[in-house]
Length: 402
Image (cartoon, rainbow, N blue to C red; front, top):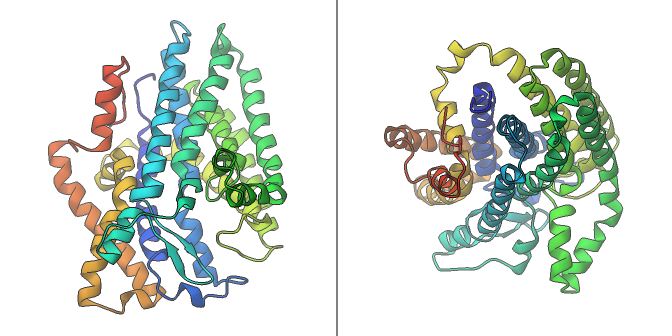
């Protein structure tokens, strides 16, 4: 089990990344987004914003896989060195987070006034001269920062749980991970009344404090509540490693349904919003958690045994295999493609349907790129260098394996 990847989860990751490419390219290129009534936006816009925020499933996925790998590597001895590798990985993800937010990433938007806050690459391509983003880009969260902090925090937690033959204390481990996840999820409600501390820190130029709050409070992936996603992922990974399929059904199907219904019922009682850290977003994160739990359980319990079917999904495997590379460069590819398309179809970004078509064309573009890149085994991708780096410091990585 130690070196065996869960193929169905890799397929799910590839599918999630395809949705990210589709909806990132669609939402952030809609020229008339300022004409939408954001006090009550159309359901299609809300659904598109949800579908673009798949970062939560990457957080859970990351902790499921890392928990399985860590348990496998501690069967002979529990050394903190084993847990130090995912901590290093966490700090590398933080570095990628800043590179993404400042240079390569998707841009943020003042939805009301339709004023994009572009990253360096996007801005330079649109204005055709080198342009650096606002200082505030340093204080935006991302799924990469959430994954990073989950890796760092959960590595310490799992070390404490697994030492002294702790893997045999299953009931204790599940209770600690589960109760922690539920508690963090519900306590994340406090993010709404204290969010002003983050904006105040930026206004008062208290940048160290603003950085702390950018990881814990700021949209789109604050540690509150997304640390809970990591705890549930670790719990799920532990059950998968121990082959507790019955327990996975008993625990996560009702839990997923609870969070889905709890989140949906709360969302129906508040005005729909897209980027505001309010109660609607609190319930939205609960709703998403429920969906992701059910998706992961369905994937592991029902799709994993169908290896014949999964072997045919090579396109999804390509997206999954170099998901970090695609995530880091999908904006640059989209912006270049945007320039080319505007030359032949100047009005495509005036309607949502036109933007959705553009997003679909971005997926096709990546499929073509990956088709040829796969022939050289994705050499020179970020994952390629990731594997080489960790091998050099003493850890064999499965990041490029299938």
